[in-house]
Image 1 (cartoon, rainbow, N blue to C red):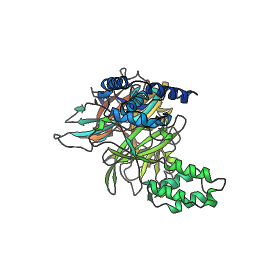
Image 2 (cartoon, rainbow, N blue to C red):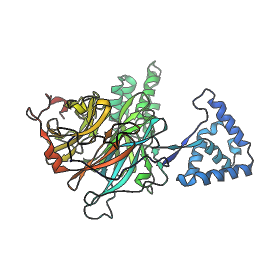
Image 3 (cartoon, helix red, strand yellow):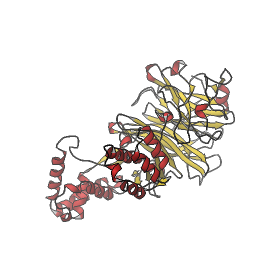
Image 4 (tube, rainbow, N blue to C red):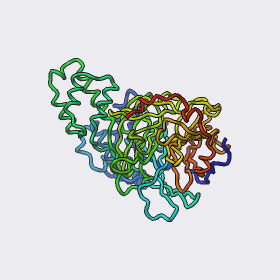
Length: 504
């Protein structure tokens, strides 16, 4: 390993089982008798006397109320989800409805199993800081029971010097509320194209929809489809596919009075039902000003899919699918600005090689140009990025991860040409950071992994997951890191590169 470059900081984040959210619980939902068990439970609750119901509800609220921001609101929501099983719902008092909701609720510890794979960007609030300080937002992959991943956050202040101060993460967690979103016609078109759906119904829907449309417009267009199209044998299946593709886009928002570290982005669609994994955040310099963008992996238990988050304030998030061959695997990471008029991203579409992809005119990520393949002993299984490229005067600094013997993960670095990032111009000859004796044991042993660092005050600040047991932090003087990198031969190109896949 490249010795002495990285300095590990003393502060770590560890999984906290007290960070819990309230989720729906349906007794026996994994069995064939689900309807009978749920109905029987509701009948038993309804037979409780008014006094007993009131006393029991007060006891539940006293026991759990300080762990959640709006416990009664959650109970009423869960009651609404099961009220169809109640014979005479209007006869239930508010206390009885709340009690039904309580019995159909449970706590879920979002990070009880693991906390890992952080990324770091500047926080939207930079008030009240001293010279040399920067407030940062840290995204976290938090894993609970059943290996279910969600996206959480921490807040920290960097500096002055090598000092790191992480804000308290205690307090009730808040799940994002799903709200209506202005959907994009181009994403629906590319989704239909990837699904090989090109018929009269799909063409008619796309022709009638505006570039941006809301729920009412979408439903009106479907309702007005000609009967002679809907009645065709392919009609119902096409309409269902259109609905499913369109549902991949949604928005999630949080109350203004919540702190960033209280917010949890929770799976909200079937493709991400088993997890939202490894968010890579970056601040993107767009035409309308800077915006937070992040890529993550949606997982439904069998398949993975690329997703993108956008936000201006880390309170309101819009989620859209990523399309095209460049987004066909894990590990997509966006460049923080256009390069030569192109929107670019790092990817690993073949599962083992770092590639460079460009977005085409239909907002699809093109087939990637290969940048770096496994070649060193510590990365012979596979390589990938550790977050978005970081712009420096010397070039685009790309933190990498490599997998070696015994599935040991280590972090390395590449340098790409600023104007032609398909050219690798330098690399770190050995790993920058590898699991030491204190980091090798955990939920996933022998791993250090990051989803993105940043430069502040002349240093690279690198948050990283250590064997999924905790999140650590390291700093590296930027000048020393760049000086330790060795030039890449053959005219600055690692491998033959064809320019057309990256043309705008």
